[in-house]
Length: 483
Ligand SMILES: Cc1cc2nc3c(=O)[nH]c(=O)nc-3n(C[C@H](O)[C@H](O)[C@H](O)COP(=O)(O)OP(=O)(O)OC[C@H]3O[C@@H](n4cnc5c(N)ncnc54)[C@H](O)[C@@H]3O)c2cc1C
Image (cartoon, helix red, strand yellow):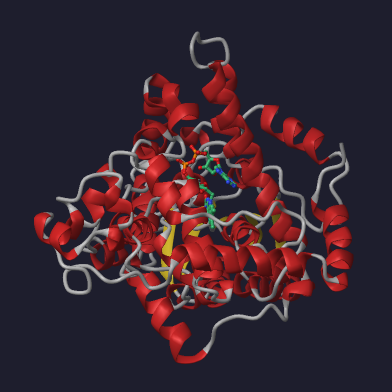
């Protein structure tokens, strides 16, 4: 017997799935394979919340497939494929291109070599509108439109020649049990759930999108909340974009749909940056920032620990971090503020916090994450320097203190706007509002006004350095779309 394998990675769905469609066309028995790989289970960017989401997504797929068509294995992909190949004879493998971390890239290179030496054909399909090996952005937008407007690649699952031999031990129940009890209020994974969230957004939640997306509490309702489903491929960007187009004429929605569509473009735009310059996982995208002075040693450790645990004494920062720990989600503006606080106010190297936030974001998407992180850390040299004042963000985006009160209950009696700068309260006022600074809630880890000023001065000075300027020109050519 010879079979065709669809190798599932971060594309955990059965609709608009090019590799599945192409595999079905071969007429060979089709086996879907997902590997829980040790190198990813052990990787600092991931945490149990991700694997719970993945196992839920796989269960959703399994429920729509005949028994034996989905094989969930634990082990390195190469070893799993080697065993399958010996037993069943694989003639072709179909997958999406993975725009992942360095470890998955290395695994893919080894896999390509293995396929070649075993006369197995490996077909890789581009991920959305991201183009592999691109060195500039000319015509990039036209390609995005072409891909997103093309018909979705669906097929009738009943007509597929599924692999029916259920001899192997499917590890899915094991992973469901292993990850089902993790604590927190996370979104559930799966293609079915992705469409529920999509429909719910377009039925009601999304109408206020444009007006609420920067508010940490309102964004939880009015933003699409599609990010984990897009990141793990429970839904394709094309399916989302085509839903936008079908709602384009609905009265009262236009402003929100325009804002939402920009973000769908950004999704691929940022992943493309990472694809074109994947070294940014390890180094500054603009090498001119390699010597930027940063705090190190014990002070750095203390600051990092306070940031990671939501104990900095700056309410907006702590509320965001605690919300992330518990729910895996925070909106864009607050993610930017967390990075800004880490790099500008605490003066830490962005690499100190990048994997930690990834492990908390349920929607961790390597390309968006690394590109955005470096941009917010102010080390690209081509983006506007933006340093967020966490106090101002609180006063503007959490005017009544609702968000801070929820996640920093130590301060729940303090009225807004005072809740955003509790260190300004006298001892008498602290007593009145039921807390003591330094006991119930930490003293601020830095003087945010001073750290803001220092960071401004440093970053503007650095931007003029010849090495930064030369690198900026290179980056503009490579990553920015010509007008
Ligand atoms: C430091 C930092 C790290 C980030 N890391 C990630 C990440 O790992 N994964 C991730 O999906 N997003 C990341 N983002 C982008 C953004 O914050 C999230 O996509 C968004 O908050 C997800 O919520 P939503 O689905 O409700 O978004 P919506 O506002 O409803 O947007 C819809 C979709 O558009 C895309 N999108 C939205 N904003 C952006 C953006 N600024 N850049 C690129 N794509 C965007 C996402 O796929 C999102 O799901 C990061 C932002 C920052 C500042």
